[in-house]
Image (tube, rainbow, N blue to C red; front, side, top):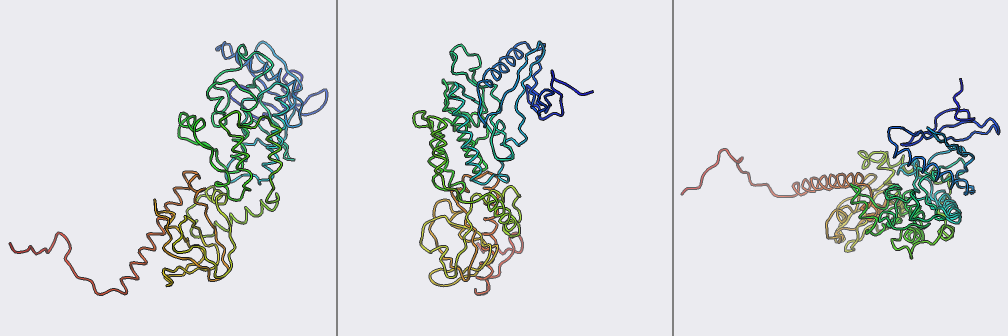
Length: 445
């Protein structure tokens, strides 16, 4: 027997949350597929049941006012004594949180297009007097044509009502990592809080990490309120520099300096010049990943760490007799040779030649204070050089940072042993002594 929710025929379960289950169902009248969000009211917790009813009524009343191609449409709402359900547009797509991992990031131009449309959707919501208050990746669905659909307005704030009497205006709504400083402080909210959250999401989709991270919620809250926003271009050097001021403005802690509305945010995004096309980006990323996986230097790196390496590095094709590192300069440039050969010299005298898989420039990066270059590195033939952005590496995941530190220190120690061996071959015979603790001759008194 087919399960039904009201008149809607259940096809399968789409997902389960803390307070609701979402089903794929069929509307027998229109024969279209719909998503049905079912909430059960429990007798054992009257306070929670009242809150669930309030959230349901909020989503129903607000959802009926919103009509935008990038907001999930609400078709029907039913409240019964023991349960309630919303009938919504079914989106055959993927939640945006699927694309937040470093190894699944979307090409830049697709990210900009998605966020651009979300800006316009939030602008429409605000003009209807609605602030979402819980913009996060899981609440944005992406269909096959890259159209975002914002969903879950259950925590939304209705600006048309008196906020002092609006029981949906409570501390703690929203997801901490995406909450604006004013939301954390429990200040009155307007549309700018959603634009802040959207800025956090844009940062994450471009870099694979959140702008503010911490080991506990207290430290995270402190950073959101007080810390400067990291440069998105430092974390991903392949991004155009024009993105930095856009994200900085979206994440302004001062409300007067932040974007006033979604349309203003969208206008600035439209000015960004895209660097790559979708198919080219995917092919290039996959090809680069496979090449790194074959390089001995990266043998111990996890796949997800290699994807992160791709985001913080620049692939440089360098001609013959080009200086990669110059003796006496002060910088922290370092990288890995992916092809070709280089010569390392000091004071105009060659000391070694290095080929594919070797790292150059690591000493200045590892030194805690002195960035002076004591060697020069010059290409001997056309060379492919993976230049690691040291500033981006400092801001990368703890796992990647630790992996680089261990690998670089291991390489330095290996070269030190080789240097000692070379010095020993050229040095005089050593003094022969006794093993400590045995056959010791005491000096006469």
